[in-house]
Length: 128
Image (cartoon, rainbow, N blue to C red; front, side, top):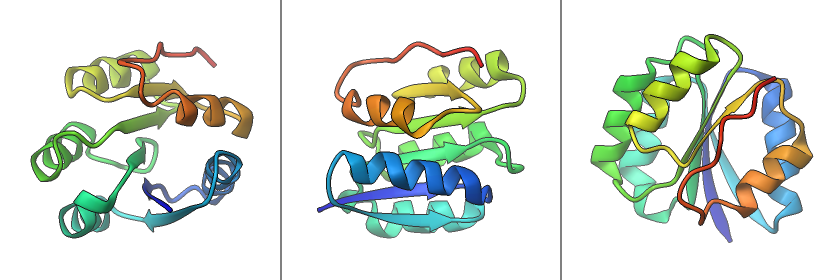
């Protein structure tokens, strides 16, 4: 069973991601509400994680968090989502070697495609 880390305070996005993940097979989603919680999960369970989804809209300290995640688990695929300053976030995200950077709002079917494609090198930013 896959293990996914999700950092968000957005309950609607959590529901959408859960639907997308479960459409791709059985999984357990570990939800973090703060950067600190996400780091703790990544550092204690990092080797078990299949990928992480980071919502930059909730006061997330993006560059710091991505760098810390990379230190805990360099090969962990990370997907970043945001509705704020999408192009700046994409630049920061890709500079930190994320798998994908996506614009909100995003639907479960679009997220499902991204989840299935995580083995590809990079995904293009999709404008909202």
